Image 1 (cartoon, rainbow, N blue to C red):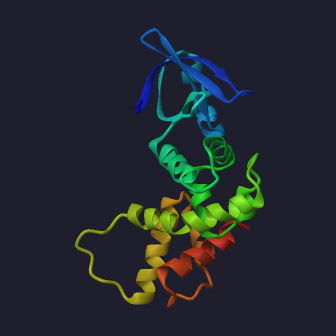
Image 2: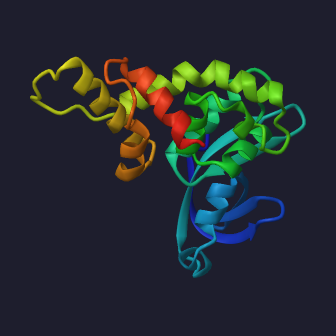
Length: 205
């Protein structure tokens, strides 16, 4: 299993969405997402500095393909997507080419299947299945990423739920001003998951 590739970027083809990394004289061709392509297409990369891609190897009867990702977060998200029935590597790459892992998480939590169906080769039924199968998994991942405040005293239910929701939305990459606006007017006595769901619905509009 190839966990990652570290070497010189010698080819970056936006048309075929592929990159070739020279690792000690061996060129590895990998399929990449639009997000990774953008990260690689920068002055540092063009100056032939070393790059690192985290990889997933797909083995089929007629081919062995490598998929490369600029971050482990994107690789983990890719693995979650291909774990959904009917979603292959190409569809997962298409989805991660139009949205970041944080944006995908937000769309799934908001049950916005339409946003996912904008990806090439992803139909409405497939998008709905992704939302259905990954909603709970993304919610668990979201809360596991929220840092705990060591030694903090238990907060009142309403304030604690709003605070937890705010922290979770920060993890997703939203700014404090966006979060403040999204939380405004929401019922502070609702549970954290419900607050996040309603806030995401506002943020995705």
